[in-house]
Image (spheres, each protein chain N blue to C red):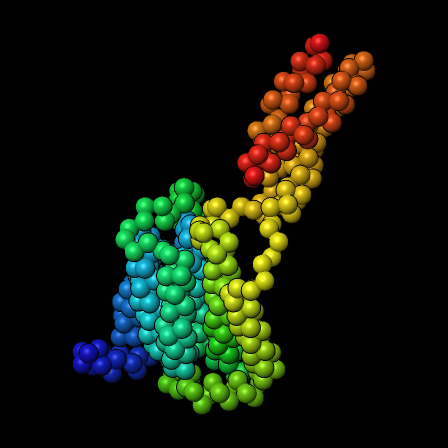
Length: 252
Length: 124
């Protein structure tokens, strides 16, 4: 800790001409180390097979991000991050895991079967984004000055310039929480069983799809042999029933 | 501080969130990955606010708004997941296919047999 302080004191007053990747300042070193911890815990959080451990690794990642906000002199954001993310969001997630009876031990089916597709997409997005931002901000430097994100500055800008979005957002938050209560309360009166509605909804969709799928096939046949046109029309009319019969038997 | 450090970290965190959203089956874990992506954007917003020294502090104000919206989102999302679990007995999003379009799978299954039936009828 004292070495970090001396590093900050020694390298804090570098001239802009002396900036380079090869001589990182103390803040950059600390940011890099905490960033590695954040990235690693986020990676463990999305890959671990134990569901509750994933939520706990998410705590580490979000707490590390709060430290990064502190290093970027955004103090108020950092404490809001600690209060809201570590205090309420993770608790909500843990309650959600418990209320949906998540297994405590390892669950081998935590990942879906398209893992390699997801890995390719994630690596492609990571490569594209990192290449893009490194190329774009290669020569950009942040002049870190203390007090840029203190509660006084943030509050003044929030209530001087951003009052209308702030109030609209409070109404949105109220509406969302009332909606969450209404959704999760569970109604006393029983709704009619949804079986009939599901079948009624399933029949036209299946018939539409099969008619659309068989129509191009029947068209050349009808053009080639006009005598067979009634036969294909009958088959076309019979196809929806044959198509919806398996779905009805599956759903009932 | 070089701007590349926070921006690259945000890009990597966003990609981790994308991987989590695509690969997880439990709906609560998908919501957690969405939170990771939102936090990556928050880091970008704070870094650009400190870099540009905006007099309105737009970056930090937008970060606060994003955090609020994320809280609302996870509250509503978990309520919906609980409702799904109560109705289906599972929070597995691979099995929540009631609103999916059954026409595609049915068409794929039925198309060859339909063509064979048609061929048989025209031959007859």
